[in-house]
Each structure stands twice: as structure tokens, then as C-alpha cells.
Image (cartoon, rainbow, N blue to C red; front, top):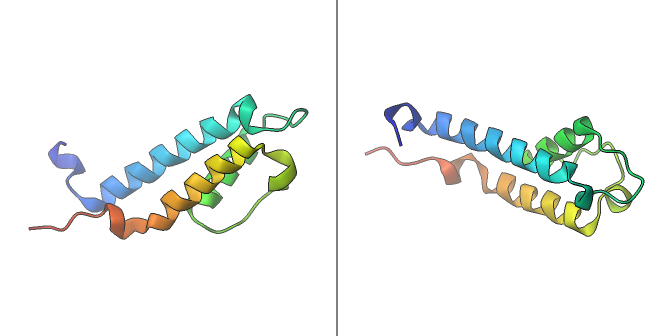
Length: 93
């Protein structure tokens, strides 16, 4: 890693951004939504960031809008978010 990524704050911010983008893309996949549910990028992004922040806010009913695959993605995002900032921070020498 380059010197610009040596600071934990930058690493955590970048990891959050990458997780948000990956989660949003995974929730936009047709396998994540039940048939007939529209592919709304705002719903996918809001659900992803809410799961990463472990807030529990939703805009659609999770049980009926998301398939078991989508629910697994949300659960994985909750686990990643639950790991917290301290798990990604490196101790300075």
C-alpha cells in the first residue's frame, strides 16, 4: 500500500465506500429482488448504507422485497458494519 493509504481514517473511509458500492451492486442484481419488484438504485443504496451503519432503517419490507440471496447480502453487510472502525484501524508503531 502506498503512503497515502497508511492512515487508518483513509483506509476505513475507502473500505466503507467500497463496501457500499459492492453491496448496492449486489442488491441491484435480479437474483436479489423478488419477481415484480422494481430495480430501484436508491432503495438498494439506502438499504446497503443502512445495513453497513447497522441502523436498521428500511424503505421496503425486507421479507417481501428481497429474495433469500438479497437477505443474505444484507446480513453480510450488517456483519461487515458491525465489525466497526476499530477492526480496520492499524496500530501505529
